[in-house]
Length: 360
Image (cartoon, rainbow, N blue to C red; front, side, top):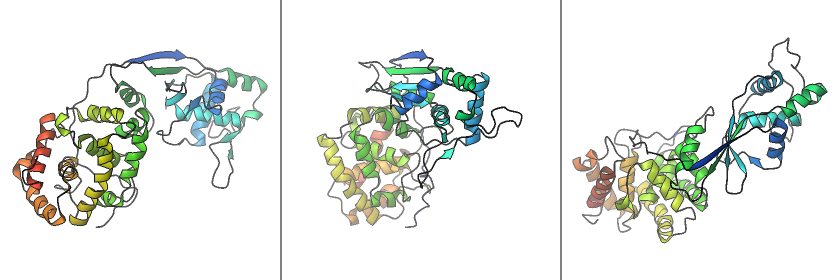
């Protein structure tokens, strides 16, 4: 099987999913910390750039224009900080702004390179007539240094209230407020909100070589669609009859309820997943692609059938998969609202009927 290049996203058919109604159970409070305080809090680890956020990506010219805006007294968009369980402030939105300020105060732009060196942070890309162009923080006048230290930046603190009436409200806060150049995808947000052993366990399952072969990409998808499919399989494994739409909310709840990933169902899934993907990878060529790209609904139906029946052999799978791919009833459940409650249940039921000879 030919593998795609590492920088290609996992191509899947689009699925329609109902947008869940959300009642936010949070507190929101504004603050106006000085830039000096923000930078110090980052250094002290009181404000953190959480692991799920992408790296600092601004060019020095962008950061320089931000610093100039502060020096000129121009308005700068507010930042959003999430108060986590350890009372640290996690940057939801505003990483580039906050880190640019920290770097300028330190005198160096960005982190160290592979040789342990850092670039001196001289303001760059400003108007030639600007008094600040080409200067480091230490080269600014004492008045300008003081002005920069004492300038405030509006910060919105968001905290999940306990006990929560809706355990997925923080997920939607991240989804709505993250306005960076590249939006965080649902699984990236889940890894942030529902942190726990489940994150590492899913990642370990996701790098399985047979699973990578099935998906057709050697490295993990940059938007974590592959990881989300593993979560989806676990969530439905020996549990699909309790599924209720929308899928997004269902996956949120499953990840929240299984953070430790140490239940009997989780242990069974960890054992069965590598066995099932090995069977598929060794038996089927480019599976789950009725229309050239991966169909998550088809993958889900077949994989749940295999995960729940360890008696299926390679010869049986090849024969039964071909029959299922031509099955009009099964095909009906691969189209339209594929995450609808009845559709998900009937799709899995039909896959199990064909692959396991009628055994549900």
